[in-house]
Amino acid sequence: MRNLTMVLLVWATCGWQQQSEVRITVRAMPQVAGTTFTLGEIAEIVCRDSSMQKRLSSLEIGAAPLHGLTRRLGLNDVTVRLRGIGIDLKTTTIVFPPGVKVGRLAVEVVPDELVSAARVALELARAGQQNEVAIEPVLSGIRLFVPPGKREYVAGAPSGSLDKGSVTVPVSVLVDGKPTKTIDIAFNLTPLVTAIVPIRTIEAGSEISASDVSESQVGAPAVGEPITDLVNIVGKKARVRLTAGKPILASAVISPPLITSGSAVTVLSIVGALRIEAKGIAKQAGAAGEKIAVQLAASTKLIRCIVIDSTTVRVEAP
Image (tube, rainbow, N blue to C red; front, side):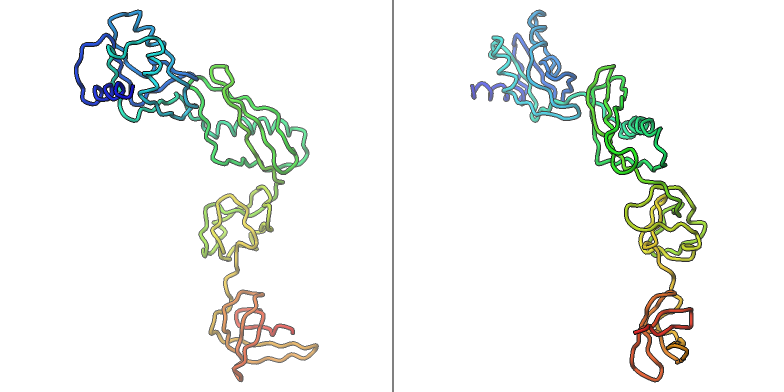
């Protein structure tokens, strides 16, 4: 058997011409449609006997891979099936290229189509809810392959809280009216809040102007306090990269420094009704309300002070 296989392979690679009753030429990357495949789907068959050719074409070779995937096929997979129906391999020429892979005909479903069907079902299910929420899909690398044909999407009843939190919606994909696959689409429901959002992406370190942001209704962030007033953000700098359309958290921005390191400042100390002023040098930059190190002019000692304005700091209470 091993010798026979080697002979068949030599015929395929060397291209020997030989008179034979049957010639089978297997394609390197055939595509099949069903759950199993036949010899006729993966090879060209030349045979003088038309009834024999029909019989060979309908010979089942093996199981097809899942939609969108491939499976390797060996020469032995074909010869075993041929011997099983009594084919004489001595009078059969098989051209079998190396590395044959059988693929399953498939179309990749666009995730947005699944999400759209699921969202409609979720919004209908929430029709009786009093609270307004932001509905955000949770997509984790969805890749779904189905057979070619006319596709329809049928969404089932949502599972989970319709008020807030996580909810999933099953979506079935029908091809030519027949169910093929069902997948759960997940969403996060968050209460709507009015917050300041970037109109465009703002890079870390950039100063924020009124033209960079707008007021919008968005889903409340899970962590952190969103900024709700333009007064609290214009003129500040982005601490991190701010994504367009996402609420800006108070922790994501910083005020520009009123005092720079090396600036001369007035150091103010208030104890009860007693008010004392002294001269000093700022050793750190700081915005209003921030604590910085200041060196008194008459001393080398550093003290902690709170920035009041561009020229004044107050000694931090012990």
